[in-house]
Length: 195
Image 1 (cartoon, rainbow, N blue to C red):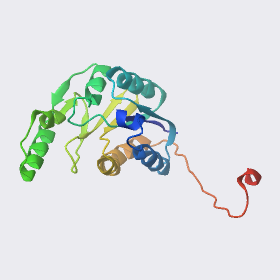
Image 2 (image 1 turned 120 degrees about the vertical axis):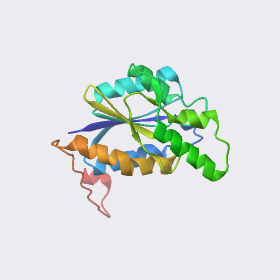
Image 3 (image 1 turned 30 degrees about the vertical axis):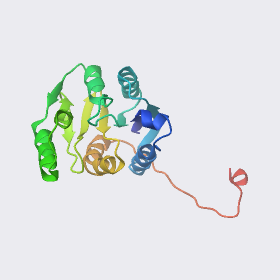
Image 4 (image 1 turned 90 degrees about the horizontal axis):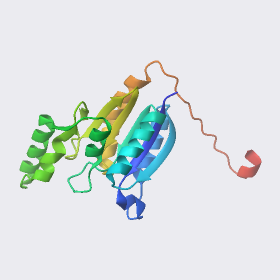
């Protein structure tokens, strides 16, 4: 049975400024696909923390999904940490670069370096195009495990899960056992008696 770990990245999650709705949504999505979620972690925007958490998760689970740290600000360092973990460098993806240029042109906004840099991806990544924003989703594999890196913006994350990641998961599940979850709804009986 395929197992998954979810890593939510962002200081805003740890200080209680933002509720981590992404992790619960992804957990439900994966469960419906027959994948067992073994762990959910929330970590800060720290280079070593990101590198360590993703490395450990890839050793323990077949699928690791991260959210956050892909944006245009200085603390968005997930791609750099992953490139280091995978022993590769960041390279420019021309399709993402053109997509981001078009988005800013259509909005009448200046195209700044921070948005240009969102088209940098770890070499060897498969791009999952984000039609709703400027940070692409990324798909990588290492030693038989898969890593999906997604933006932390909830509607962008859900869009990428339902389009790109769902397709990749179906490929991964070919020939694997899946977990089936059944819900029994009861009324009027205390939980202590049911168990």
